[in-house]
Image (cartoon, rainbow over all chains, first blue to last red; front, side):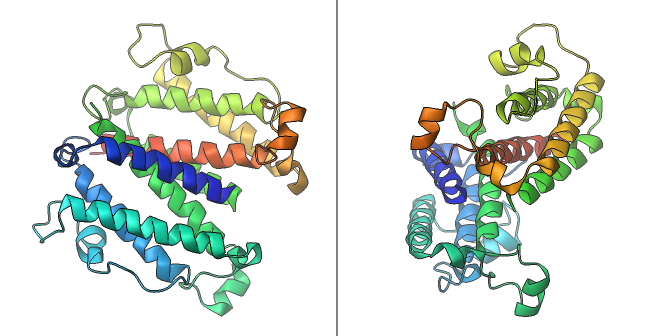
Length: 151
Length: 151
């Protein structure tokens, strides 16, 4: 069910991204707030970091972290093009999807890599499935903002 | 974990609502979009409808449905005051919280009331826990919009 909720949210935000032109993505979602393109890069970076977090391997695009996680929008730092960001976003989610499908039910309740074995004994809810639940909410919250770019 | 995610999102949006004045809630979250106060009423109505949906009893404020579910913002229909909406929102969530705490783990996997017994056999994921997952994402998506009302 948690994975279904993830999928539904990914499909829904992808429909949004597909219907927004690169030009529309350059608009701010609300005055003086993030531009759509920054949210796209931010989501790509956050989902990319789920790969090491869930023990699925290395980040594919670690160069996104500085611009889209450490700095706010319009920082003046050089950024990939919108088409490149769209591609990263797609690739990262496909990669996650493959790993999700391969994970055994019991593995979802194993710890994620950002918590030590000792702490996990005390807080067993800090497992892989919980990462997916949290990131689904994160995704939903930015989807709620991106709808404002629709005409 | 799903209930923790619900709680975290409720606490976080309540912090937002508490820090917004009634005047700030009258602002639109983005130009020509919903006002904060409409989102508050909408969320109160959606959560109120979770009571019958989860078989916890009747809706407390069914008169919210027409204005906040059937009509868009600024419909011209008479509305409760913002203070009343804040009160409804608080009361509904307290009621849900009480029922959540009383439900046995197995009951979460029982069907919700909007699906027939026959359909539930075919789609067992349409259970009570799934309603909470979906409504948490719904909540997160509106929280993402309400942050724009912060100075």
